Length: 351
Image (cartoon, rainbow, N blue to C red; front, side, top):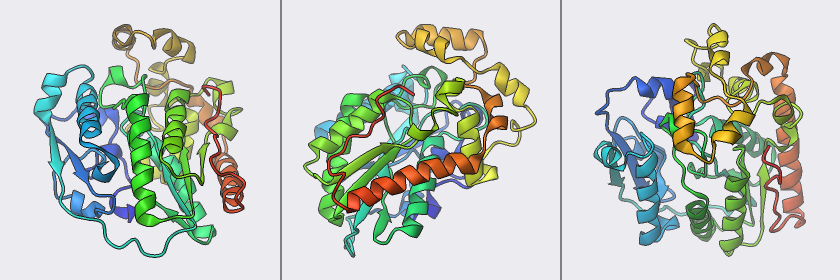
């Protein structure tokens, strides 16, 4: 199912999430983008018919008409250029894709999906969908080893701040995210009838993660667990000042497929990448004022990375992945044993 959606090579295909910030910036200023609205079970290949530059879909069963209106309005505030609703409205086309869900089939023991910020810049060398790529590498491994474990479609929008000044990123806001997650889980569980739901993400924002947990609580489905998959990586990430799109995320994405890194930048231009990185301290200082953030980023040629790209050389990709996988596997085991129903695991620290 995901062969038509999850990327295997950067800067290829119609899905915006496959592309890097820097390559998207090269597109003509009048490039049209398409936001499809479809049913939960609409095949990805059907969505490929709507255009050449496609944002991740919104799911109609997960939204009231009011929520849909507010989500679309928020996306138009952000994409492709933050704060340019008028210009964005002329470049982003909303397409309703007709079709209803098919029969759900055998009810899974565990239905899993991620809620990641897939429309989020990750510097010059990584695709926008970097977070989803990491989450689904874990979920698909679990699907190969756990009986009755089904991987569902990701919710590809979330709360973010740092990416907005650079463009080509979408902040759904925590309020909208909570409502959307609640509606998605309610609709998805009514259709698939799973015994349990497991939700993951790798995005660093505690606000984003708390919004997911709040949505799960409001969904009316009680047997769920949530996990921030980067939680066991603190000694390799936050403790080394490597928070976003730096060495940790680079090596984890490379582990999935080397072709997901832009060869024009990595590894040959590592020095140039490092020169554009921003420190966590500076990012936190600038976060309350996005205009000041944008001014600083332009003046200092910041590239969207908040982290340490050189950290890549000190890391073992298999070790990082195994830590995430072991934690997720233990969550699923507990969930199947009835020990994790309604558990909150958003990771209480920012990093």
